[in-house]
Every structure is written in C-alpha cells, then in structure tokens.
Image (cartoon, rainbow over all chains, first blue to last red; front, side):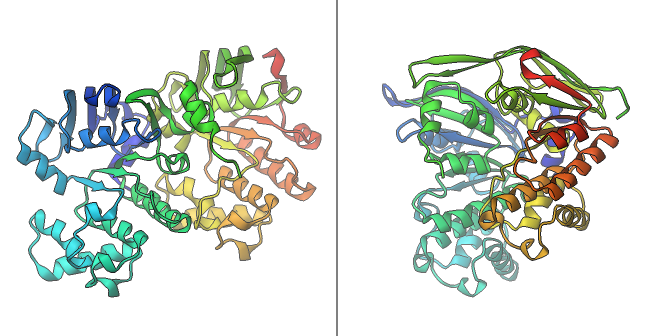
Length: 272
Length: 231
C-alpha cells in the first residue's frame, strides 16, 4: 500500500502530516457573481476531494486556479512539492508550474481532446509525458505505454492507433493513462465522466476508484454528478454562485445536508 | 481491548432536522441523548418507528451531524470526538475502528461479490490471500451460494445482497460496531448466523450498538435494552 494511505490510517501519526495543497482566501471573478471567491481549504495526501454544484457555480474556475492554469485575483495556493519544497504557486516562476504540470501533477479534462494530442498515436500520447520527465529509452517507453494501456483496459494492439479512432470512453481512459504514467501525486479532474454513456461511465468510475486507492493518489475532482462524488470522494465542497456553501465528509453532506442549496441538490436526485 | 473499557461515550447530543425547501419545517429528534458502552457489551436501542433510533446510530457513525453534544469513540489509547473531528480522521476511524452494517448494500457496478466483501480488509493492508479466505468463510456461513461469488451483486435478490453486506460488515474485527437492522427480513437460519457473528464480536471485545426488530435476535444478543426516548 502507498505510504500516504498508510499514514492516513495510522492512529498515532495522522495529525502530523502536512497538507499537500492549501488554499487561502482565493478569489477569481470575471464579473460580479461569475467566478469563485473566499475559498479556503487544505488537501491532505491520499485524500479525494469532490467539488460539486450546478453549472456556473464556479467549480471549473476554481479548479483552473488550483491547477496553475488561471491566475487568481487574490489569495494563495500553497503546494508541497517533491522537487521544489513548499511553494506559493502564483508567487513562483512560470517554469516551475510547467514542470509540476508534467511531473507531479496530472490533469484529466472533461473533453479528452483537450488533454490528448489527437494526431499522434496512443503510445506516443503516453510516451510524450515520459519523455517530458527525461525518459529517453524507446524500448522502456513503449513497454510502459503498453503497461498503462493494459491498466486502463485498452487492448495493447491499439498502441499505434490515433486517439481520433477511439471511442469517447477509450479516449478518456487514454487520457488517464497519459496522466498517470509519470506517477503524479496530485490529479485534477474536471467532470471526467461527463458526456459518456452510462455503461461506459461505470467502467471508468470503477477504474478510477481502483487506481486512486491502489496508488494512494490525492485527487481534486469537479463533478455535478452526486453519484460520482459519492463513489470517489472522501470529502466534498458544495459551491453555489462562486461561494462555498457547505463542506464535510461526503456521506454526511449527501445524507444530512445542512444548507438549503445542498438540500435542494440532494433532493433533486431521482431515486431508483 | 480489555473488559469494562469505555468504548462509546455519548453525552448531551441534540439533533434537529430543518427542511429549508419545505417551508423551513424543523423537528427535533434527539434531545440531550447520552449513552456509554463498554468493550464486549451489546446495547440494543428500542422505541417506536420514527423515534430516532436510526438517527442516533447514524450520528454515532458521523453519517449525520449533530447540533450539540459530544460523541467520543475509543481509538486505541485515544477517545476521539467525532462531532468535531476532521473528515480524514473520521475516515481513518471508519477504516479500522468503526463498522456499520445496515440491511442495504451499496452496489458498485462491475465489482464482484468476493471483492465487495474483501475490500474493507484489503484497505487495511492485509494480505489478499487472507482477505479472500475470510471473505469466503463469511459468505459460506451466510449461505451465499458459491456460484454467485464471482458475480457483481447488482442483480442479486434483496436477501442475497443483504447477506453480502453483512459479510462485508463483519470482515474487519472493528472494536466498535453499529448494526442498523441487519437481520430485517432474513430467514431464521440466516438470523442465527448473524446472532453467532454478533456473539463472536462481543467475545473479542467489540462494543456494539444495534437496532433489531426481531425479538429472538434481540433476546439472543442484548446485554441492555435502551429506550431511545430515555437516553
């Protein structure tokens, strides 16, 4: 089992762990009410944090700010980096942020085409990230690409095909493989199951759940699907109109929601 | 765990539900609830339907929040107040200390019955072969036919799913165990198996709080009956 997970379950040492990511007084508004503001939270190693809320609630804006893709108006995002130590993301060098994005971090976009290079092979999509962190040996790169294709349940016989020849679900799994091949510590996911068929969604969710627990990944996942949040997230942040209205343990927020908006959100799910 | 060690210490718990989208209707369910449970003891809650038994049990699992009061659970040498603990502390507690068994299985698509049952023990880092052996033993005892073990329980009957869920709930030897009507609508044979499992848990020192509607189960496991309105 991964170290982070062991630490999380150890009773004596759990309180001594430093957060992986800390967000302090973060604000980013495009216009009044559009964006996100007054955001504060800590993410600990091995934790999966879900950000839920309706479209336009500021979830994706927040995710972009957290993952160094959108400079906030004010506030800090502090990250505990393996390579650079404690760093204030937006106070640091742009080059450092770029290094993080291709090594310690992974970003899984809602639309696989935003996270893949559609005109090069599946193998090259995975290999590219390995080369970005200094891997040079062709045989090793190809072997790792095959290993990861298998891990995300894509037939290795498709290694030389382009993602444009893949189905939506396969593209999404390829995007996940491309991200995980460099063993990142922190993954950002924006609606990873959005736009997929229900049957394909289930397969992807199961895969994500297994990978996350097996690798002890820390994840921040934006979703409007509360079932996805329940399955994957340890903890939730509920957003509405750019503000956090409720936070807490996932099942507590979903089963005993306190804020009127969360109650509305939860009671709107169809029961089967 | 030693006998007479305090495992659960609930004091002055208040809980009301406010339905903001239904005219802000508010109703109190728990009023100054207090309860102490020792290691090896099984407390059975009783009271009418709607009296708050399940709410109380869910509060003990931190599945429901409370408005005031303290719920302290033993975790090794420490007593942890779950009303104020951080989410990750509660998750750690649930992993190794605090078990909850209801009559409903939350089905995860594509995951086999055996894996569903093994998972909580695997998450503790226990060797897969041992997890599998224990899972098989529990499934066998609960009369879940072996031909179903490799299948995902999504398509099973209600009773089969319920027994899979009980196996999952008993795979880890949790020091604190919460049982929310796990025997509801089980046949007599399987009720007996659950009674055995509860007795074994008591014998190893688990503190148990349960809700049981079957009188035979209640009689067989309860050290104390507690009226939810009186706690």
